[in-house]
Image (cartoon, rainbow, N blue to C red):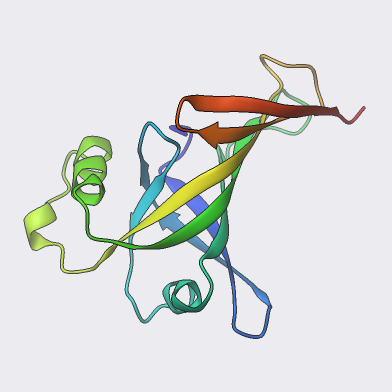
Amino acid sequence: MNASPLCSLATVSPGGRAHINHMYFAWTDRFEVIWISDPDSVHSRNLTRNSSAAVTIYSSNQVWGKPDRGIQLFGAAGVTAGPEGPRAYAKRFRDFDAESNDLPYYRFRTRTVKLFDERSLAAGTLVTAKVTPDGLEWMKTEVWA
């Protein structure tokens, strides 16, 4: 999750259409994604109506034909008032000043993780795991050769 300071967030509009947004993010040890956003943005408004969301994180400087890696997260998101927002942002972004931030924090709670890491796994291998209170629980492995 440290491969990039940016992630992509997919949300669902009231009409059922997909919307995607790129944003800076931090995370917790439970694969929760934390970000700051204007409540009037399209993705924030979408989340007030439908909390279903997905996040993808990967390094954008990967090269075609070389081993790739990335992570896809599936779950739900919404505004959070807990301490995890400022704490996660301060840990990830050393220059972040929580006192001067006037936008709400959002938290994405991951239910399922899909990982590909061709350096550690074979090419075209995707591992899916469920997030549980005890950590990750393997669900399936797919191989696309």
